[in-house]
Length: 352
Ligand code: PMP
Image 1 (cartoon, protein in one colour):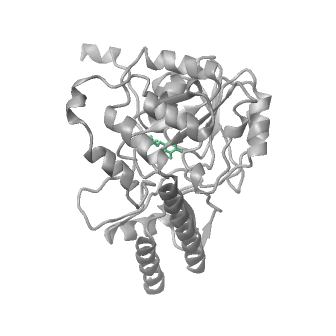
Image 2 (cartoon, protein in one colour):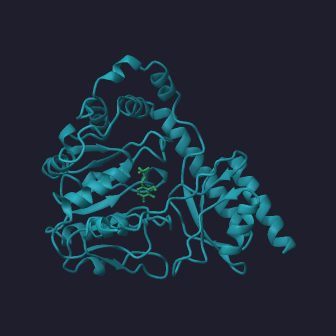
């Protein structure tokens, strides 16, 4: 067709499967196995539905101000979006226009190269070492921007904040985005360094530790100037990204600190338990500081285990990609779900 020559063609990101049927032990998309805070439920039940006829506050002030109090920063230092995917995509569009390649690890969140492609941003991937660690020298070369998740996905590996700080300090001419989607599960945040580095931006999400993947809330924190540029682009794109329910539900979730701590604590305990169990079954694991583990079996190929699990309604994530095609990424579910997984694997390995 003639018009097709004018199409912006791109290969979309492939998200983990969302099975339609129930009865699945769903450990494939790093969701939280527990519900959001009951306060979120109360807010949504009490929502003034007639208020939905109005456009929401385009600055999402109630949410932004609550985040500002929570993280001890100014409201002008916060940008909110429809999940951190939205925040990250806007950041790529806003900050990565230098013409030089942007840098990110070769094994990482598989949305980064998709955004780079769709926005026509040149990029180069920097190989992690054999332990899936960053080699900081890779990021001390000319570049048009840097994005690093910490803890990394899908490895779960937490990079030393000192190493990341060196990267930020070495790149005053580039914006460095640290994607902290999983930081609440035992990682160390770079937020305390925001004041020191005008080129540092930290991105977090309500999708994992606050159990609200379905509500779509993400945010970035940086200095006001940087956030101002991000807002300019966002308001040139779509002013009303955050709906009223998301603004109110996000605020309620943040205010329920006790519930957040309890939920995260349970997931960390279950993760450490699952690590030990899986090691006992012959798996090698990274020291994940996230809500998933990254595991490779000493004798059984990951693809085979993935298939066997799936046939038995246990969903985990597998990528047929170089360097990680013998690993499984397993989201931490409830203790019961993890017991089901371990019992299945124990039996499978024995009977094989
Ligand atoms: N960053 C990383 C590293 C992730 O794994 C995810 C989850 N897919 C996201 C960002 C985006 O999460 P959300 O858009 O739900 O905030």
